[in-house]
Image 1: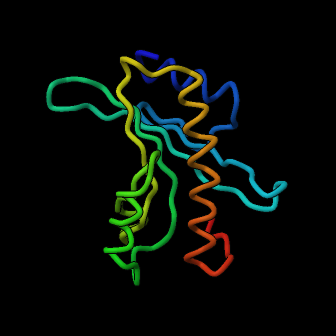
Image 2: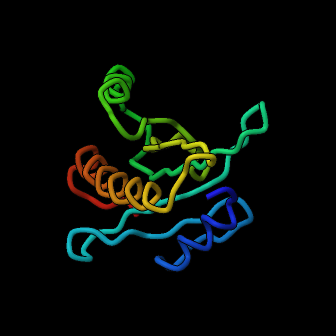
Length: 135
């Protein structure tokens, strides 16, 4: 995978896209037998040196009331994914993210990241929202 268009083509062949913008696609991953769904977002990032990265992210929940120390501990212990904060409708929102450089990215790696991050994001969302599904 060397371009976002290749990634878009791969993702759109497997999932119904909710967002299909020039450098952003998203879809809902069905979980728990279709009872829950988790939004998954893929976007292109460009480093200062011109290298391109794929960011895969999934929303976890509002940042309000979250313990920063606990979030940093999670980042330290994770093999795949890290917690970050972004704006969602003008409010700070916790996201589970992973950035991968295009030059070594394969279809299998993208599928594996999605398969791991979607369910992990959902479990984290359930843990902080007492079982609800914010999406």
